[in-house]
Length: 181
Image (tube, rainbow, N blue to C red):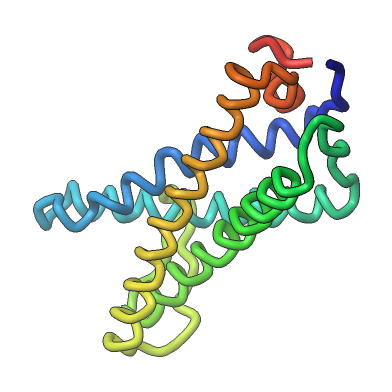
């Protein structure tokens, strides 16, 4: 069955953000288990830099989505499947927008600047407040787990469409070089 495809721009945002999330979320989960020192500091800086980049990309992706829309759902999908898909997509968009903001505000409350790959630093937004920082980092961490779960749900649904339903839904987001339409 032929389904409408996503544009090259939408595919670019999707796969680029997915790649960065795939690196950032696991990195965030192990940061505190790395011994304190220069390696941990560099990993934190990488995590923060990727967070800034994800924030910029997800902002652009959401703007693009509102401006250009998305292909209609496959006609074989049931209403609940469409609702579940839309819910997970928009929950991911929201979480990927909110997470970097929370991380930045938490980092600011910790009293630190936010680096961007050594090119520049973003100044703290608020005054130092370590109790607030701890609370915000806690929420940031739980949201990271939620993103990880939604990410896995999204992947599982895509694989289910490809291997079980064989309906072409996954192919409309794949680049042509990987079998996409």
